Structure formats: C-alpha cells, structure tokens
View (tube, one colour):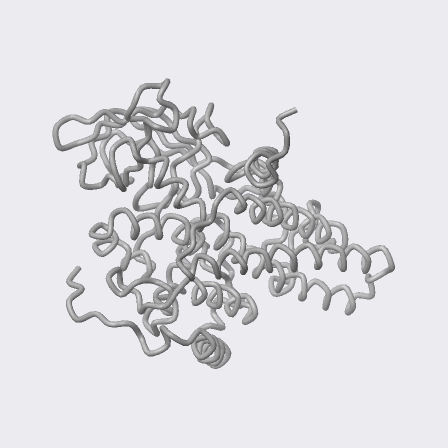
Length: 393
C-alpha cells in the first residue's frame, strides 16, 4: 500500500465532532435500515452481512477513524473507536463481529509489523477479509505458556505443526494470527512467536465447532507442515509473549467496552419490553437495576482503560479487572433476559427480532464469558498477585 501523502481526516482531533456527525449519519442514512431488520441467522450469514455493513461505513470513512493513516485509517485514537461502537449500538445497529477481532489483533500488527499492517489491514477495515486469533489449544487455554503447536524455522520460512481450538471466526477467516512455540517446551513464555498464517495454506484443516445454540462461530484448526514466510512473523522470533501481552491490553479494554455498549442498549430495549408487556414486577425491576449497575460499572472501567490507551499509556495486570467485570455483567444480563422474555428463552425462538434479536444464541454464548480470553479464576489470581500484592497463602 502506498501511504505517501496520506493525511488524517478532518475529525481526527475532535472526538465530540466525530460522534456528532456519525450519529447524524446513522440516524438519516436509509440504507442502514437493512441491518436493523437483518434476517441473517447463521454465523456465516451474519459475518457476510456485517462485512457489507463495514463496506458501507468504510465508504463514508466512519470506521477508519481511530486507526493510523498508514494502514488505511483516518487518524484519531481509541476514543474514536469507542464512540463508533457506542453510537452503532444506540442506533440499533450491530457492531460488526469482525471489529471485535480487529480491535484485538490490529494494534499488535500496527505496533510490531507496520509494513504488514499497511499491506493487509485496509482490506480488513473494508470488510474484504477478517482474521481469527489462534491462541488456545486443547491443553493450553488460560495457560498460553503451555501451548505445544510447533513453529520450526527453515531458511526463510516457518513450518507449523499442531492444533488450535476455540478459534473465533476461523471457519470463514482469511488469515489466522497464531501463537506458536519456536523454543523448547521448557522455555515456556520465552519461546513463543506470533505469526500470521493464510487460512488457505496447504496443510491447514479447519473444522467448525457446533455450539449449543447451533451456531458455528468457533472452530478447531489443524496444522500439518504448513509453510509460512518469515515476513509474516509479528515482532521477533521467540518474542511472541511480549506481542501477546501488548495485544491483551486492547482485548481487555476495547472488546469489553464494545460488548458492554451493545448490552447497555439491549437492556434499554428489554426495559421497554418489560414495561410494555407488564412483566416488570418488583423482583424483575430489582434484578434489572442491579444488572444495569453492573454493566455501567464495567463500561466505565473500560472507558478509563481506553483513555489510558489513547494517551499512549500501557495497561498492566490491572486490565484483568476489566475482563472480570465484563464477563460477570455479560452472564448476568443474559440470565435476566432468559428469565423474563419467554420468546428469547431456551424453549422458544425469538419472535420479535428488534427486541429479542439473537437473545437465545447470545445466552448460550454468554456461558463462556467468564472462561474465554482467560478464565475468571485466572483473572482473580492475576489481580491478587500483581495488583493487590496479596500473600501467596
């Protein structure tokens, strides 16, 4: 990608103006009504629909703010991306699923492989492609330092063998950002490398995993002598742990903020439905208030972290607080919905897509909210050891 002469957009220095103009666009663009009543149901249909939404937003420059001009963005900071997610939610539009992964892997590629970012990430912003994050393995979930997928350097290439599991969007992804072991098993986190692998490389087998909801958002990925050029390494050989920890800052802050923004709007719609159907008894009202406070707390905490990222600060182990609050609020919110909305419960499919869109699927997925991306127990251990400095016993 030729970045000569690329300059930031006119709203790069003014988040308030960006939010105001974005809100006006989302409220007045008639084409967006397509996504307010989107009939897409399967994972594959949803991702294709969201890719078309990204293309529309990209054409107006809206999702390019918050990303550097060198990678197809229009400048600005994480605060632009946070405003983007919040305004989409408040306009009753979906946050494209591809954004959730982009906001995790994108900053790492920009920070550790800028030439690769300039070449590939503009297509991601346009919705032309999306990636999966291949970290977890059958025997290495929360403990990534125990992973065993092997990357062997052979001249100017890396040969990968092993297996990944629970890889989001892998079944439809164009590329996979994989954490592999390039050192000895004993080297633990000091012998890991992150590499970007094209999903159609010879030797890759991808098997979608059917979830309890019937969706196939996750997959397991097998690598059998997969050859990848070394210019796809993100950062340094055996330096993958530093890249992974860098990446986790955005996974904690941005992912959680987008999730809570989406849930806050859903809870407002749920409140309206509870009142309209006269099912807002004392118990339901009390539960709603309690969960709304949980979500507000998680969102406020996420915004605090995003402001730090936008200021160029690094998030340390305290980012585990974001993950813990977000996961707990996510599960609590969907539990309330399953309890008070029969049409979105486990025994009946949603009848009204505006108010109960994907509630059943999301309830099932929320069961993993305190497990995926590092379990709640692991997060509490990090907070106890590295934030509160509690005694080991």
